[in-house]
Picture 1 (cartoon, rainbow, N blue to C red):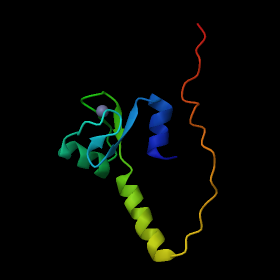
Picture 2: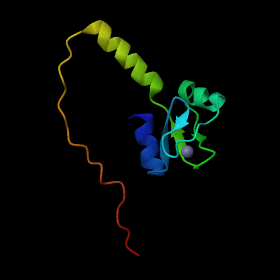
Picture 3: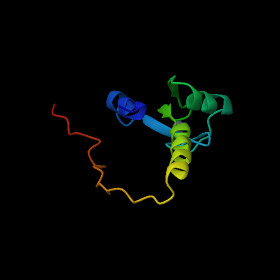
Picture 4: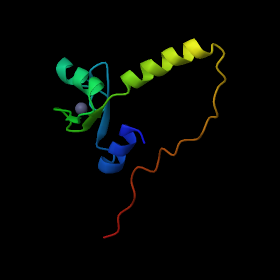
Length: 94
Ligand SMILES: [Zn+2]
């Protein structure tokens, strides 16, 4: 299971993606040091501004792009699944 999924499972929606050193939750830049550490290691960092757990897909996406370009130029569009985006919160009974 992907690290992001694990984090989502464990922390729910308190997880934010970092793209180009910018937290996608609050749009504040994290320190470059931290951003590169997030990309290069499996350590968990927390956004200093919004307090969410930071993850990065950058490394993975890059690798996939290169792989796809080299392996086959004609890429068939995959099945488009409807993502269940509205299931983040479950109503709690008290
Ligand atoms: Zn943030």
